[in-house]
Image 1 (cartoon, rainbow, N blue to C red):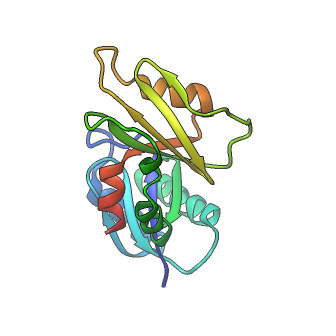
Image 2: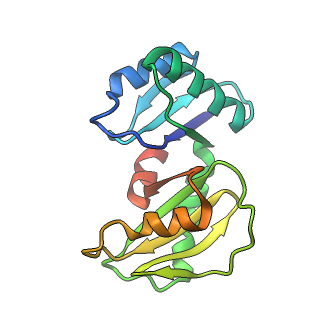
Image 3: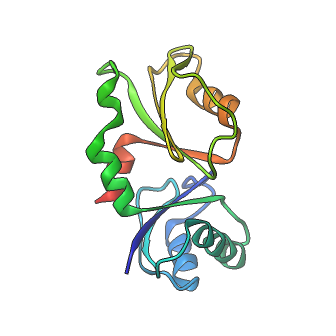
Length: 170
């Protein structure tokens, strides 16, 4: 049975307990469910179907069992592993002090965007399918990379660090 990862937008330990989230996914019929970290990453097995169908099923289960929905973006774990192998950052000069982040889009980008896009030390470097690859240097201005990503792609997305993707894909 294929293995998938759901990346949920807006989850943090203060607004969602991981055991309850795991139970909601199990109630939806997903198997071998595991949460990764406390930021809304759920890995599970499911019959092969579209990512969109899995997203809708997960969201319906969250509404029913948690009383709220965190927008879900689902990717096959095998796709994440291939992404890690190809390392899209290799083609760019990324500072060793920079944080590498991957933004998962709910759909495909609607506008053509000339890359790279930069703002206050945050850069959108590349796009491939529904993933955006960025880096940023932390600044006193706070999470400017999120402002740049939302300004460029809207809110139908969620972002994870490269290190989180490594943990999810294991």
